[in-house]
Image 1 (tube, helix red, strand yellow):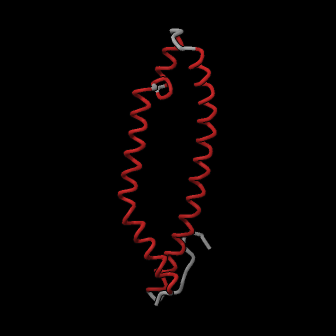
Image 2 (spheres, helix red, strand yellow):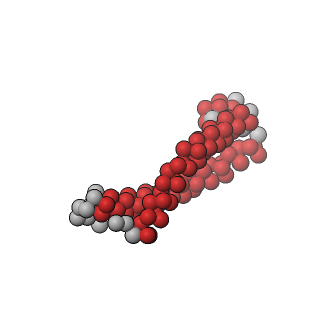
Image 3 (cartoon, one colour):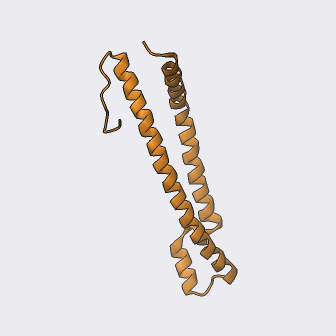
Length: 119
């Protein structure tokens, strides 16, 4: 009933779904670890309240202050890039969802209908 290409696609999706819990868990632990490391070893980069408090006390080295100014700009660019990537991933996931819905419709011997406004 399904073509060889669709069978390969479903096999790939199944393997990705089996791998995701391990990969997702690793990513969550990695992000949490990075946040904890940053909070522990570089609180000025992590905690803006600590930075404001130390700036008010005049306790921030000028070299650190220039580094923080540069990192702020870099963070802004990085966040913009990440948002762009998320949007691209959403386009890809919607295309994949559309393909899956068509495969399901074909396996159930129903005419393929447009799903969610995607053509």
